[in-house]
Length: 151
Image (cartoon, rainbow, N blue to C red; front, top):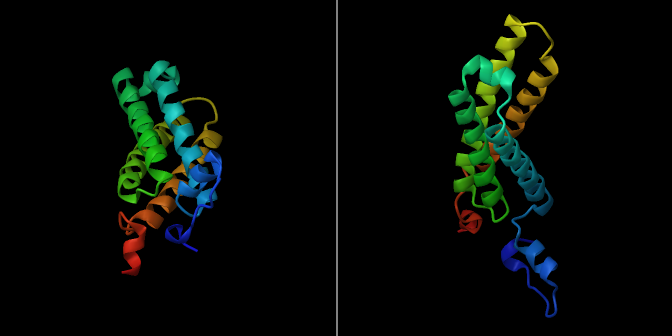
């Protein structure tokens, strides 16, 4: 059943109506929404209080730009994923992959050039990059209006 075929029965509660407005598959859209929201919050936190170990290596301005890319990507993705605005979400995925790749390179460089083990941190960032690339591949060729595929 597609979203276009869903009829809302009389007396449907507000939460149910909201749930029905989320693009299908709804659970997947919600998981992506929470992922984008976490990235938005992480970017804002780094803008508010940049991590000194990274800012010391790349400079404060570069760190703020990296955090800004992550925050903007997270915000765009969170807004676009629930209604299924794939053409907007593509920009979010590009920003997030770019920011996370730069961050992974920085972590890798610090792993090689300084004391301490950053491999766990690097593996989490690389896992995120993989997750977002999978999303990017799935939405890249999708039209703005999902119903247009069938016309």
